[in-house]
Structures are given as C-alpha cells and as structure tokens.
Length: 304
Image (cartoon, rainbow, N blue to C red; front, side, top):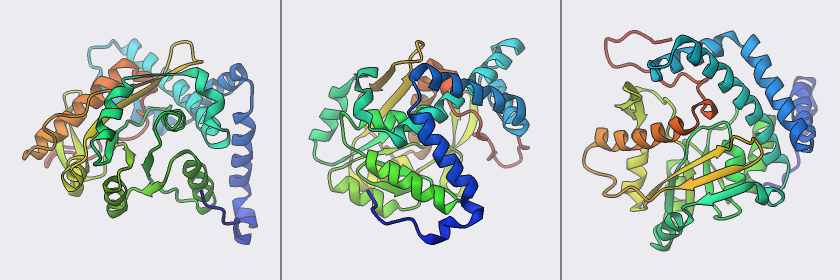
C-alpha cells in the first residue's frame, strides 16, 4: 500500500467536497449493520428519484434484457436496482475503510477448489468478475481466502483516486490500471491471481459483438488475449448479497475449458454466457446504471 502523504494541493477548497465524501464513507463504514443498510437504501431511493438520466438508462437496459417481464415488474426491478446499488455504496465504504477479517463470519465461499486447482498449475490465474453493486466488498472478502490483484479504472478526481488506490492496495496485492496490459500480464506470469471484470462497453476498437441477453453487445477481446499471452486458466467468479442483506456468497466455477479458441466471437460469447448466468441469479444487484449497449453494430441507432 502506498505510504506517500497526501500532497498539500489537496487542501485546496476545490477538494473540500471530496474530503467530505471521504469522511462520510468512514462514518458509514463504522455504522451498525442495520443502520448501514438503512442509509444505503435511503441513498438508493434518493438516486432513483433524482438521477433521471441514470434511471432512464437503467429502464432501457432492463427492458432490453428482460422483455418477458411486465411493465410493472420492470419498473420494480429498476427501483430494486437503485436500492441495491445504494447499499453497495456503504458496502464499498466498509471494504475501503475497515479490515475484511471482521466480516469473515458473513461470507460463504463455494467452489474454492476450482480456484485452488487453477492456481496449482503455476501459470497464474485470470479471474473473471462482474460489476455487481457488491464488487469491492466482494474483493475484500475474497482476499480472506485467496490473495489477488485487481484491474481497475482510475478515478478522474486525483484526491479520490489516491484514496481509492490506497484502499484497494490494502485489500489486493496490487491495483493495476486497466490500460496497463503489460502490468496485468507480468503479474499473471509471476503466478498471481488477477481479478478482472470484462462486462462493460469499451467501444468498437477493442471489442467484438457477441450476444448478451439476446442483444448484440460490444464485448472486449482482452479476456481471450490475456489468456493467450499468459497461458493462464480463466476462472469465472460470482459474488452476491444474500436475501437476508447480512451475509454474502462467493461462488467460483470451474475454469473455462479450451479457452481461448481461434474464434474471437465464440470466446466473447462464452464470457457473456457466464455474465448473463450470474446476473440472472440476482439481477437487482447488477450495475444496470451504465450504458452496456451504447456501441451498436454498423447502421444501428443508439438504444439510449
């Protein structure tokens, strides 16, 4: 973890709102569990009412992916998604500001043998995760069983970036910028587990189109590329909040067999099939707030 002090420039008034947000995260992290959940639900409901653009994006995504649901059921899922992601904010605060060991009693880990078997091959492991609202707490709890590195997107706010990187570097062995492919490959070749989430739209240049919930989704080619460059097994991993809102389940699946293949679309489709399977288990916990289908095949209009 970085021990560098925060530079004096972070005392500038423009960073005061960020300091306030960081302070609020520390407070939220230490709240009693039921109060923590209540705060998270409140934040989610507030965002559901006020964040009109994100609500419309979520409504579009859910209508596209669950056309079999009634209009009322879709709207209910939209609201549940905001609530789950509000809870996810206080879970993230808990992961970043407290030690995971204090929450060991809250997690069950199914399928540990699959990751242990992949690690035993001595080639490192690429773990495929998903952007659920529980992502950061999931990473912290997973670290109690297997140390891992994480690939992440740097934050545009330099103060929050420093805070976030410090927190994630305490949880994970190393936090690797998503643009640092060499860093990812180097860590895997050194025998490390690297946690990586390929379920967002990064644009046409780095993607192929593969089905996700019967929609053509721009799916990043990097999963297969990293596997090809390192020879590492690719292990799917799911993490979700249980219905009691107090406990969590990590579920590791067997490594993909015969992956990568010579077919980029087939490889991307296999990754998306796992992602869809995981989302269908707890759809309200997924990050539907991002424009997953923003990049369209040539000639198609924007869905948003």
